[in-house]
Length: 230
Image (cartoon, rainbow, N blue to C red; front, side):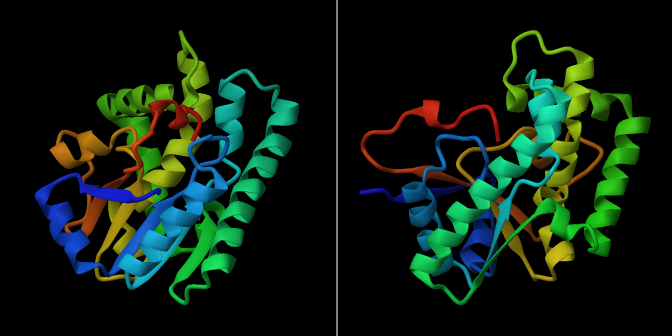
């Protein structure tokens, strides 16, 4: 039977997890790990564990990642929309089956009108343009997301919007969604998360923001399901 073993990244993350107030559950597109059965078990665990759950699926920025992988730009937008819609539909079907009263689903683009999210994203874009060390960390972070050997800087920059769209919710969900505290849940630490919590970047997680790895606990498990395309 599938189960989940929530692993907080730090002791502070553990304290926030213990509060069980709010979770953002990241569900990726074009990733074999997120099969319908896995999504359902993950959301069942999340909606029973936290008072509120926000399920996050990718937005149109996925197209840049596809272009970086070699997909023609003329086709990348349609493919990204199709993949994002398929992922959202999987989530919706899982939530319909579970029928929780404490969960919502949205993508990054639906957060665009949110002032805190917009300010955070603009700040990250400005930091990328003005802070060379931060820029290099960002480019290093998108390389495993794209998953292409010998990725050029130009290719990495094409995939950058994906990273910058997601980071605000990794850094400060409470300000964006109006919660007292929150944990971001994903099967394994995402690019830059370790650096964020180690304090080596010019940005830091909010004091009430945590990160939790939600690894499968079933007996037969393979890391191949955590594909590089998120």
